[in-house]
Length: 89
Image (cartoon, rainbow, N blue to C red; front, side):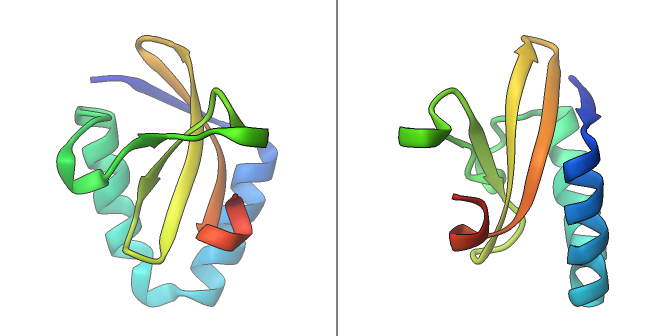
């Protein structure tokens, strides 16, 4: 189990995401719960990023939507962004 922190940019992105996709709010909460329990749960498709996002990671909400984060410590993840592949990468 890990702790999760979120910045103001993630909070804004989260609000926009829920407003635009209210049907995915439950799925997002479900995936966040999985992430907190086990960040590398295969259902999350957690993967490291490269290029300008080197050092960052992402996990999937659905095939189309992802959450970008980084590990502050082994037991703390900092959520940064949420959106489509093109939005967050």
